[in-house]
Image 1 (cartoon, rainbow, N blue to C red):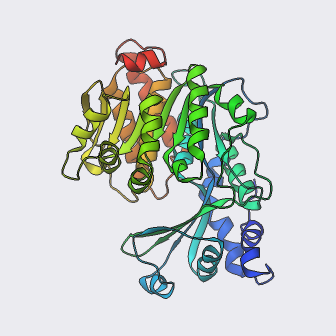
Image 2 (cartoon, rainbow, N blue to C red; image 1 turned 120 degrees about the vertical axis):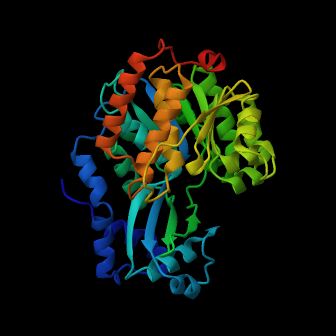
Image 3 (spheres, rainbow, N blue to C red; image 1 turned 30 degrees about the vertical axis):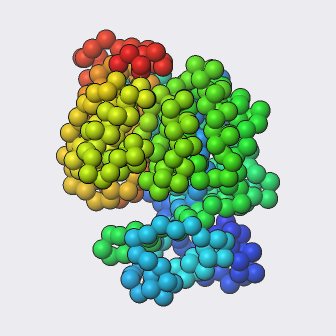
Length: 413
């Protein structure tokens, strides 16, 4: 399988901001093939695309397609562009083009990014083989542009066994996140929402949501205009169809800006909530002095199952006002980016495999997170995923009686 080149989609995505793509540098040619080399090798090991779509999905995630441009830069680079180190800001099309052009000569790569897609790819890899149950069918729906970046994103997910089901928005541009990492490992993030930053509830989305066992809503969607209406209708359809509804908290500032909307969904529809300790406190409107276990217990009065990660200190799973502590899995950390996304995939996998032991399910999630933290990159590798799934299946067979997936079961844990 040949490696994809980055030049064509790169040039098209920037053409309107710089007028012409004729000045493309040799570095732009290099970056696509270099940056995607590891993922392409993964694809060659056995992941493919769906020739025939399944009648029903195990998990469908609703989110916005975002292509990540990540590169190593120095402090002088940030100062030259007037960027404050360690911050996250939203930029327009022109600002994005200015930063990407300035990155010429830096070491950088492109990838189909996003918190939700990280979780979905990890889940698809955990379920690539019928270990402890049938192979899993995983998909994503939502907002994607008709531009080359959108095609790049869709192709990369498909090759990771995650199908992007929604059609592209005509003349829409796909969102991007530029991640600039300095030698001290601090990340400065610039997000461009794209002109495809609207998700409408239509018959296509309704049909997708009605055919899944678990429906996952990405918290970043609350930032998009009028998307709360779409989220509400999609959650209503999911519950009507017997699916579990999961919500990712995504970001503290996002929760603070859209607090009422979050609780509209969490309070009325959510069976599962994924959050880190800061996000959990924000959802509870707690101060930073409150412990994550207190936030977990509080949220579990409103949501049947709550998953709260607390970095190297471990994690908690909350059910009915109680919190089960999950110790961290040992690892030598190389890159903490994507740890929470990986953890969420473990919880989803455990639920789909009928796990009744919260401690065992949380331990799997912690092991998956530790595996990702101990490598460069945010994606769980295929062989690691298969090994983790086999280990979990063995432990599952040796433990308590397995149970069926469903809202009633989650409520009775």
